[in-house]
Length: 306
Image 1 (spheres, rainbow, N blue to C red):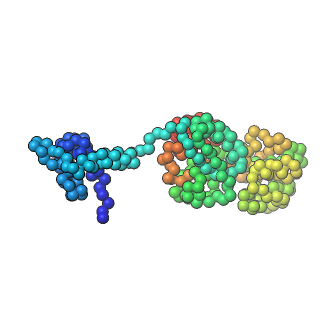
Image 2: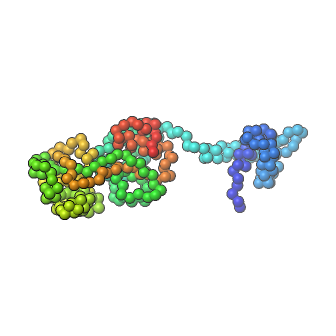
Image 3: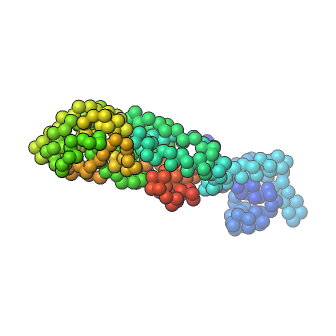
């Protein structure tokens, strides 16, 4: 059986409401002849005359009277499905959003984001999922709404928006011998180091930069997050590599310094699946994340985002 033409449903609604081919044609912006042809198609589809001549006008058949209320409701539903989504009431929104982000992002930005979201939408729950993996499948499956971080992996269909730029800096305890003089690359390499890696890898981009200069370093510990690395350097003579934004407001007992080896900047982004792109609530959430990261109100209250 061929799929039905849903234009016929809208035409039938107009014909039954107007009881006139001429008036139904005018209502739908069609010519009288086009409306007459449509009525003929409706008669073929339903197996009923629907409207029959009575004097100079048309009257509905019993079948048409039986269908009239149902057709009107169905036509309204079709129109509702096919029109753009209406603006939502953010203050009355009740929804749970799952965000996957690093511990450092949560530590620096989560409080600001939660405060903004709670103020505008008290019925919204933000659930921060652990970054046990960095694969994109969770976005595809709908298990997470947003992936936030410095992404090494993406996919062609995913949407990505830059949130902020960052860079890596060295971190040591107050009074560390390294800071008694200029931090040269040789003195830096000679220290013991703690590496941050969710995968437990003891080597990172610093090792590549040192190798290019004919140097190497000794890695003493590998931890999964910047906060863990900072806790270790605060109580030892080890050196860590941390996000500059992580320590921008100052960390008690910790000093930072520019790295003596060339390192590229870090770009932090938010990533989402295209099926969420036009969803008004999801657009509002992305605007909130963007504004929380940039410390502004731009675009967030209006619910707009890239």
